[in-house]
Image (cartoon, rainbow, N blue to C red; front, side, top):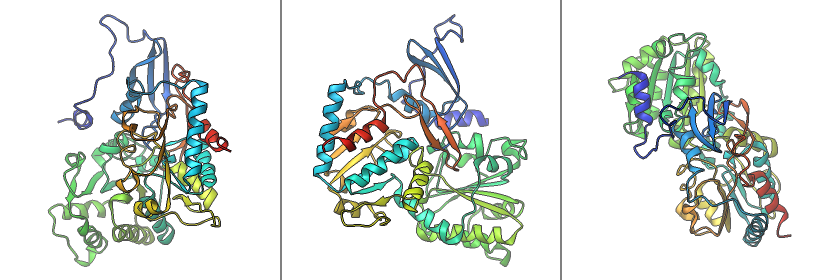
Length: 442
């Protein structure tokens, strides 16, 4: 099977409806407007080579949009999406939301990692007003990753550097073909860079997972291991020159690939590994980099909002930590964020859920322990999932119906522009909704 055919098959959703095609005989260029070099904010890859073709106010064709971005775009046109509210109805809805949240403080403000920078800042100010935690969806993994980056030192890099230089790429309990579909083709494996002219032919791909994954057929080495064996594998790789081995058929090939590589890129999902594994991975990276013969970079591959890095930057600026913070009535600035969903359930009385991510990646992730709390939901997607929520506010989708500043997973900023033919639908922006909730109810 060719690489191209494998990618198409691996990302094909049997429930997907293909984008509308031009009628027979109609020229491919017969569209009202075309928009090229657009940025897709479907995940933290922020692909900047997307083309949209508009006819009669609808996107009828796209180029370079993966399954994640396509689903995100299609959901906006589904019939069960709430219509844009008229000004009077929007004002009443905002007032109801403000009254509910102010009467049920402290409030958990959750999910700003999918917003543009201006809306992230607005959500921070609102959390302070409502005296509750301000957290991203992946707050536990985020905190654990950055605590170790501070303790061990963090060898990071731009994705473009990985594309140009990496000779071995390792995905540790992360599968980009499930969460970041174009990661392999743009940055980490198939990509052609200055020093990788033949793409995947001159780099090694390895993965560690608990079960079979989509990426497995592409890997030269695939370790299907229980989580408890991660540290043993890392220790064996760190000290293989001392004769330490690991009982797996792919281990010798893994050792040879590491010996022949001067640049190694490691992508890890911090929410899927334990503390000991994270410690061991950072120690391994530190050892290789200190020896001076190899460079090993570690980059998180979050199953989180597309602007998780933007959230981290605002959090660092406001709170000196990248993983959010807790506001409380009698606290001073800088209290640490809660450490678990259960702790949050004990400390908050209501939730403001911001869900501009992929369905069901974010909207259905709210843990059971928090589902009985009063909820205000800000969501640009279809609304049938919100029948049990107290207040639902439909908004414009960042990056499609509104503009925003987003940061790629490696920290590179992108100005994400809305599609001109779609931005005038009458939906309020998330920035405006958050600002108005803060001023309403006083």
